[in-house]
Amino acid sequence: MATYAIGDVQGCFSSLERLVEQIAFDPAHDRLWFVGDLVNRGPDSVRVLRFVKNLKDAATTVLGNHDLFLIAAAGGVVSLRPKDTVGDVLAAVDRDELIDWLRRQNLLYRSGHFTLVHAGLLPQWTVEEAALLASEVETALRGPDFHSLLRRLYSGSGLQWSADLEGLSRLAAVTTVLTRLRTCSETGIMESNYSGPPGDAPMGFVPWYEIPGRRSETSRIVCGHWAALGLHLTDNILALDSGCVWGGRLTALRLEDRAVFQTVCRNG
Image 1 (cartoon, rainbow, N blue to C red):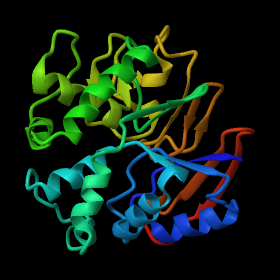
Image 2 (cartoon, rainbow, N blue to C red):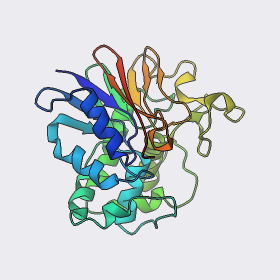
Image 3 (tube, rainbow, N blue to C red):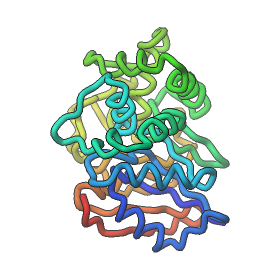
Image 4 (cartoon, rainbow, N blue to C red):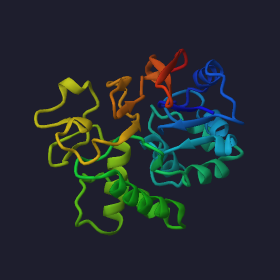
């Protein structure tokens, strides 16, 4: 049995199909972990969702910012922009089933020595604290009033984490961290707009995983979200967004021995 963590697919189903074939994935014995952003910007989001959903217990995914955007679009909270490519999901005959399945996925998942999250963790959070905060959001997303959380998330006002936050603002701030974080200050202030290479981050902001003394630094964190970072593997950070949808590669990392498998993406 092997566990393969896979980077941001973003609707690139043919690339995912080739990668799964390359690793000789056997759902009876192996497991796939997805870092989130299953959908959007690529050509075939609906087939990606159906594939992962149909794997049942053989697959685990956490929610990324594009996955949440799809849920919000399906609920009428946001409108599609010209660059969004989730119309195939919204027009699908199994649309409601797929959206309901998606909003019941985790924001953070832990197993053994590994923690799976889309973007990252603030320096002041331990993994245990992050898991408790994520569970608050997961409960809200799975509940009947999940639209209220999404409206707060997409309200347009800046969201920064504070332990004093309550209600929807607290949940939206947690969601922002777990699905959008790239760089922050040493005190955990997020730079929410920057998506370029780590070395060009605005003054005072550094990659979240480089903050000295961050409280999750001894945990092995599997993540994605940052295409400009690319495949980035250290002892405890396994960042797997290698820019498939932008013409890069789709990456799978076998967690047991850190073997890397990639397919060149031709459908971004």
